[in-house]
Every structure is written in structure tokens, then in C-alpha cells.
Amino acid sequence: MAHKFLLITAFICVLGVWGCVEDADGGTYSSPAQSETTSNPAPSQAQPTISLINSPAEPLASDPNDNSAPPAQTPPEGENDEVKDSGKESDSPDKQSPSEDTDGTESREKGENATEVGNKEGKTGSDETGRDESDAASDKDESDRERAITILNEKLARYLNNCNKLFKTYVDEDGRVDYALLRRKRIDLIEVHRTLNDISNAEYMAYSRDEKICFWINTHNLLTLKLVVDNYPIQPRWYMLTYPDNSIMQIPGGREKVLFEVWSNKTEHTLQEIEERLMKKFGDLRIAFALSYASRGSAFLRNEAFYPKKLDEQLDEQVQKFIDSSRGVVFDVADNEIKLSDVFNRYKQYFANSKYAEIKRYRDRSDFVRSCLNFLLEYADDGERAILLDKDFKVTFIIYDWHLNEQPEDD
Image (cartoon, rainbow, N blue to C red; front, top):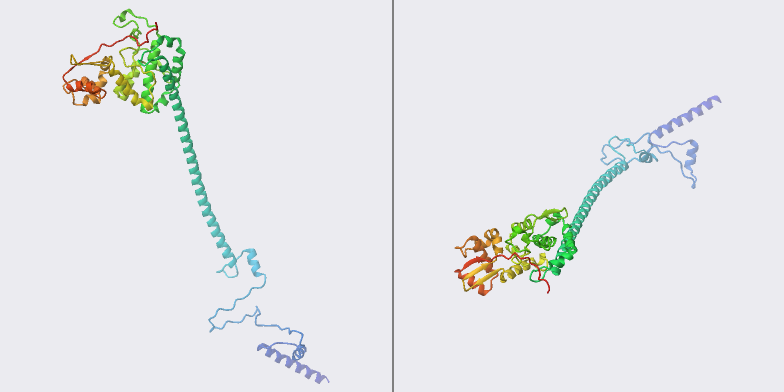
């Protein structure tokens, strides 16, 4: 009995070894019970098997004759999540996780783009800010200039208008002044002088050429009135016997020494200094016929102010009025003589060095006389021109009348 049990046991072991050999050749292993069950499987129950093909412990070797890429291995579930979460490199030292590489490149590109855009925006913003600040500064400068010009023009306009009102009130069309009335109402003169002193030297420097000329002509004539009014009625000096009793020449140093405040800084000038400034700086001979000496022999004191926009016309009118009068030029046909006012003689140096002296007509005359005659030709009528072009005439000068240019008293 015991021998039978041993034989059966040995037989079973042989069967087991044989089954293992078959299993090693690629078969499947199953217990006898399972074999029995497999031979007659239940139709509704799936067959559980253990596959050795995809076992991670024993991967299949690739075929050396097969050039196709080996099949991709799917990492165990959750491995990718680890890489994504940790941001570490994969097992291969030569490769990075696709997600890391993509994200890193995109991040760098985005960072670079953001930096570049930021720089551009910063530069653009800076440029725009700079332009805005520059435009704002330019607008402010322009506004300041316009405001300064407005103030400047307002001051000059106020002064010229006050001069105009004063001259119209106290000077008649013949240039004669009501000094007696002006002395009683000298407040009018003081007010005009005050507007003169509102103007600074710096403001004057910004004036145009015509504005400067108007400023000085009106100032000269205004201060001449002030000189007379401050000394009216004029008292004769025994040592001035050669001049009329009421002459401005009776006032000691009237034109050469008496100082008048001009500008807001109270700079002082004499009438002679103002006259020389006008003649030397601007070189217009017509100015000589716009300046009043407060005398009957001088140029006519205009009964209105000189204005920049009308200056050229006003100066021509002054010259024409003077040479047409008996105090200016006398054409004596009977004696073949031209008599010139002593005003020409008083401005001799300016005439002798003017453009009129360069004209070759009257070349046998002195520079001064030639200049005077050429100057007269511009204002002479046809009859006077005929005499002037005859060339065979004498030139003499009229005795200057130093009587005060005051209006006659009412009877």
C-alpha cells in the first residue's frame, strides 16, 4: 500500500515537471483544477490569465532585423503626474519632460516678449511724455511771449494815446501851444509823463524800429512842453539879449543841461541827447522836421501823436508842411535865390553824410547844399522843380525865429 502511494506521488511530480517545461516554452500554467475548469469553461465567466509578454520585469528583446522604432512604453499610472508636479527631469539624462521644455520655452519667450514690449512701451511712454512736456513748455513760452507782447503793446499804446490826447487838447494846427491853459492843468502833463515812466528800457528794446522812432519823437515833444510849462511864464535873462524875452533859450541849459526822467528806472536824458539819439541811430532826415524846439522857426509841433502804423505818412506830411511854409523854404524867382530854413543848417552834419549827398546832381555844390537840394526835389511841386533844376541860383538861409510857439491871447 505504501508502495502504491509512493508511485502515485512520483507520477504526480513527473506531471508537474512536464507542465513546467511546457510553461517555459511559452505555454500557460494552471493548476489541475483550473485545467479541468478550462476544458469546460462556463460561458458567462471570463478566463483570468497571467500574461508574461508585457511583464516589466522581463521585457522582450527587439528584433535586430527590425528597423522600426520600438513600441513606446507607457509609464506606470501616476508617473507623469509626478514629473509635472515636481518639475524634475525624467530618467533619461539627455531628455527633458515635454511639458517642462514647452512650458520653459514658452515662459522664457513670454518673459522676453513682455520685457521687449515693456521696454518699447516704456520708451514710447517716455518719448510721449517728453514730447508732451516739450509741447507744454513750448505752449507756455508762447503764451508768456504773447502775454508780454500784449502788456508791452498796452503800455506803449497807453502812452501814445495819452500823448495824442494832450497834443490835440493844447496844440493847434499851426503847432502853437496854449501854455497858459496847460500850466493851469498841468496834471494832464503829469499823467502823460507817468505813463512814459511805466515803460522800462528792457521793454523799449523789444519795440520795432518804427515804434522806437515814435516813442522818442513823442517823448522829445512832450518833454519840450514840460520844460516850457515848468518855467512859464518865461523870465528873460539879461545875458540872453540876442533872444526874444519869451524864448525857450531864456531857460538856462534848457536843451543841453536840464534832465528829464525817462523809463521806469528813472534814467535821465536831456532834450539834446534824445535828438541826437534819433538822428544818429535811425538816420532818417525827416525826423528833423518832426521835432519841436518850442519856437516859431522850428518844425511844426504836430497836434497829434506819431503812431507806428502811420509814421511814414506822418513824417512826409511834416516835411511837406514845413517846406511849403515861409519858415521852411522860399523860392525867390526875381533874385534867382532859394532861401532855406536854418533848421537845415542845424542838422548840417546829418545832411552832409546822407544818401542825398551821394547823388551827382549839383556836384559843384558842397556836400551839405547838394544834399539839401536833392532832398527838396522829392517834395517840390512842378514850379519849384523847374527852379531847382535850373541850377543857376543862389542858396541862402532864413534867420531863425526864436519866439515861443505860443497861441496868441484872446482879446
